[in-house]
Length: 513
Image (cartoon, rainbow, N blue to C red; front, side):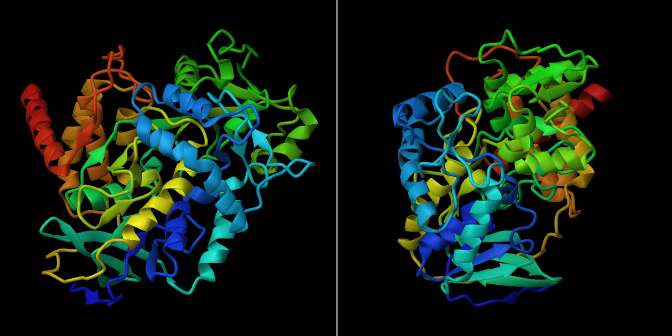
């Protein structure tokens, strides 16, 4: 099918309309920008599901240095300290900007922002909106402003299929709308496509979040970073619903404890207990489940009848599942939640491919390291969107249109490969399982089925995980349980990944003969 060329006058295109995409578009105003959304705005995005808030050193007993110390500790020696400092110092001003845009953050009776506590934070520094509906409220406010901003053209139902590259730089993209294929000539593209949680059977992310932006970037030749680091949120509501409803870390911040079916508090002797870093808590829960226990989050004593007022959305979700958190413990289990890895970017969000930027979860800035500190992700998105927009605005707006791709990929569907991903790249990993998975994924990733792009992203992640022969942060290998003294960089391109995958596939087939 030959794409129809859609002339946008060389305007930048933002792929993804969650918080990162909306904020980048708003910061570009009054410059024209085109915003592509796969679905109607506000549906199928991780942003609207975010219960946690934004972390910023706003309290009288807090400082950016304390916030930085907590971030570096959670990142397990793998953070880019310079970038982390820059984001953390920018976070308070970014929150002020959100307030000016109309975001209704929760306040105490004296009018000050109400600050919450979450795991691995040494101070109360999390700002929320509508209690446990922060993402929804941020999105609602920003979408309202975006719809009133005439320089932003929003195209809903539009799925980007491939970036077009000439001489190492972006010159356009190909997308599909209602079965019709469109080509957009542009030298400026911003990826704001979110994470990869939809690759897993147990996830808090929309099921369509399979790493779409990573596939686009990889096929364009961009360098990727830290793909092996996937954060599993310890406390998703254990039930059949997918995506799994999140039971926010803020509940543990208010004093809720984790128990088994006998009421035993199995984290009591762990440093930090229920507020230890997410990788520690997720592995502890996983260990309990592996030996046949059930795990519950018990808020009866710390919150009781106050639960519904403090966490109205979680209370409603629990009651829909037949659980009253005021008088019953909540069944929980870990679920894929956030990807620390992504497109390798510099301080302005530029990738290794000219004309390609990334912002939000799809980007790897180095802030999160091997394990994201709770509520640093929204803070990162709102801080870095300013820098990305400034970089895009200051770049060349001219365009050219080369030869179009010979074939156009189909709309992707991750469901065929979820069982493979969940088994090989879960909370505890091992080399044999990952090598077998790479051998299985290789022919799928180079095919032309709906599973091709999701298989490609998983292949990239598995190769990165195989190359890291240690356990660090969220990446835990049973065959390499020790941690290196120094954190080694983790960079990968599609070419390198395929070279590794072919070797692994050949070795696997040789062993099976």
